[in-house]
Length: 87
Image 1 (cartoon, rainbow, N blue to C red):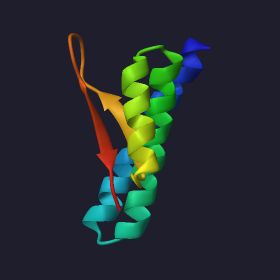
Image 2: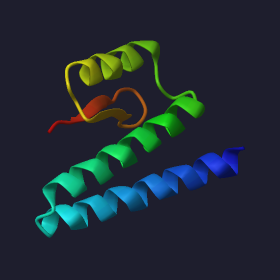
Image 3: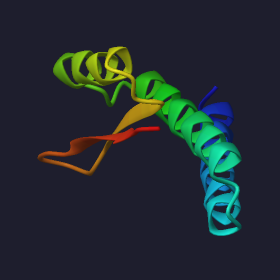
Image 4: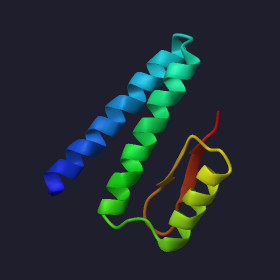
């Protein structure tokens, strides 16, 4: 199971990079869709690894309800933040 989640996170990183390349190429809509999918995939990994505190999960859900394309926790140790992607 852990190897599958690690591969999913690697795939999310690759997908995010592809989205950035699309953005640089002027393909904004495709780029945002790719980056949002990558962020959602990465967030699922963090949930599986049990790295998302309940308060952060509520914040993420609130951002999505407000119209964010995707939101995920980021940072390491003793703190962090929620990053959201907006249209």
